[in-house]
Amino acid sequence: MENIFCIKDKVILITGGYGVLGKSISKYLANQGAIVIILGRNKSKGEALVKEINDSGDKAYFLESDVMNEKKLIQNREQIVKEHGKIDVLINAAGGNMPGATISPENNIFDLQLKDFKSVVDLNLFGTALPTSVFLEAMLESGGGNIINFSSMSALRPLTRVVGYGAAKAAVLNYTKYMAGELAIKFGEKFRINALAPGFFLTEQNRSLLTSTDGSYTDRGKTIIAHTPFKRFGKPEELHGAVHYLASDASKFVTGTVLVVDGGFDSFSI
Ligand SMILES: NC(=O)c1ccc[n+]([C@@H]2O[C@H](COP(=O)([O-])OP(=O)(O)OC[C@H]3O[C@@H](n4cnc5c(N)ncnc54)[C@H](O)[C@@H]3O)[C@@H](O)[C@H]2O)c1
Image 1: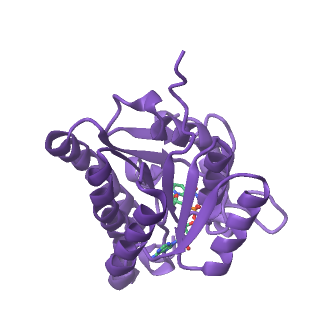
Image 2 (image 1 turned 90 degrees about the horizontal axis):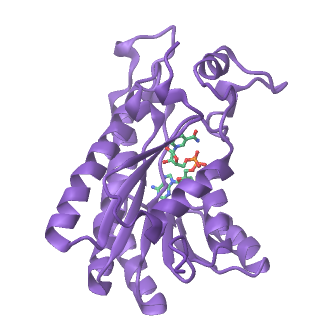
């Protein structure tokens, strides 16, 4: 019987591919037989990850890129098509937050730095929409394509503090749903786009916000755990199954969906 989860030899691009979640996903997908192309701004980080993946016998490549730079993305597209012939999957994992786009408990909305708010929307929304448009052109050439975006729990359940990030990730969700219809109607069912909404995963960006130096939870960390039925944060490897499903033909009738991976946070009240 056909293995509907097979992703062997699929050409999978991942922006932010050496970030905390991206790195774990890149290694996993390469280990499943995909040809993983990691796009990022830092050559040494990207090449170190590629070496680690290649040393374990799997296939990965690094290309210097910037999700905000159209010219660079077009160069990336041309190089990938020349070397690999096609792009099967694009994972838009680049994203993040900035302190000025947040409001701490002792501050209020007037302390918000609108410039930083805009930068966070630029990175998360346009840093998703721009690579999508650029790489979609190659997908159209080869007759199919599959896009996986990174939204967040902050899009579904507005969280205190992270006003800019929450708004940006909510926009990523709406964009994903809009694009699902747009792609299928204009180009057919071989073009899919979905989003992941991870809950709380401990990463370098949020570690000091969620844990103290001795490893215990901060007040915010405790509040999150109290609202998570699984009573813990996620581990990066717990996103592998969701990404694999969306990247494979197992989800071939699925588009415009938001796959929540959160230990129950979204469905739980009291
Ligand atoms: N960690 C969590 O709990 C969590 C929860 C929900 C969603 N997310 C989302 O998951 C994705 C991965 O997050 P992470 O936790 O691994 O964070 P991370 O900071 O480790 O990774 C993000 C990566 O994006 C890269 N990046 C930033 N700007 C870029 C640009 N202009 N061009 C190219 N790359 C750029 C960074 O260099 C970094 O490698 C992000 O979109 C994040 O918002 C994370």
